[in-house]
Amino acid sequence: MKYLRKEEGFRGQELYVIPSDVLRDDGLSLLIRNLQVTDAGYFPRAAGHQKSRSRPIEEGILLFCREGEGFVRTGKHSFFLKSRQACFLKGGESHIYGASDHAPWSLYWMHLRGELLPAYLTPLENHTGPVPVGSEAAGQVEGLFRTLLRVLSGGYSREILLHSGQLAGTILTTLLYGNGDFHPDISTANSRRLETVIAGMQERIGKGADFPLKEMAAAAGLSVPHFSELFRKGIGYSPSDYFTRLRIQKACRLLELTDRSVQDVAARTGYADRYYFSRVFRKIMGLPPTIYRDRVRSMDSSEYKAFKEFDAHGDTGIC
Image 1: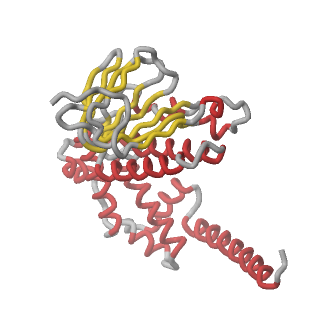
Image 2: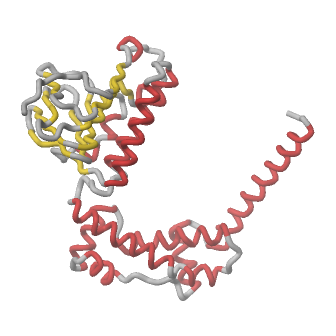
Image 3: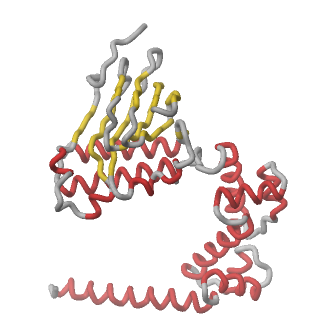
């Protein structure tokens, strides 16, 4: 069955457009100018949906396919956009996109511009085609889009412009930086390998156990050199350095939240030698664990004292 092609007009659709003169207001704050949503919407089961722009527009366009599928063509690339996939169409490029005939997509979309937009899109510099979206990230993105549309339904006050831009930034961050199925430099399969190893690191730290590099590589199903190169490329640290910082992170929690001795904290983070632990802690945190604890407790004490003074004034009606 061939559908009559149309740009909009779908049962249950939502669509919001910010008036152009509002966005051109020279009095808008830097926070608003950093990232602006100019249009946004949701087209559910959009049979026959098609949008063609031979004359490019200034704004970039984010498409997120919730279910179903469709096609996207730009001047350089053509691809299918399927369920739990997203893509970004750069401003200034002609394009055409539309729902498939056999499984029309349900599509969230928004038009974006702003001084920080290129920085958000850095992970896409060498990426073409759709961005796969993991199930957890997909749920988060859909929830953020629902919130965005609800906010835009309230009008176009400066508070709404700011709120919608911040939500758009969170959507981009979730898709491009907090999405386990996408990494700009490594494949999805390798990204999942690294997730497995990092989960193993957390498990070992929870048990106060070490995690030798050879065992990390084995958990990833790779040789030690290949694994080490992949980990540094994907995470930005060597495996051993990352594991060490996770251990020190746990040590900070124990020092701050418990009265355990430094020896006990060392043991619970996998260090048999408290002096070696103290050297590692100082190298990473810039001060020994005992002084770290004293400083944190000192700050907590002063903050608690200030709160009690404020609370006492509140009780007596002093403001």
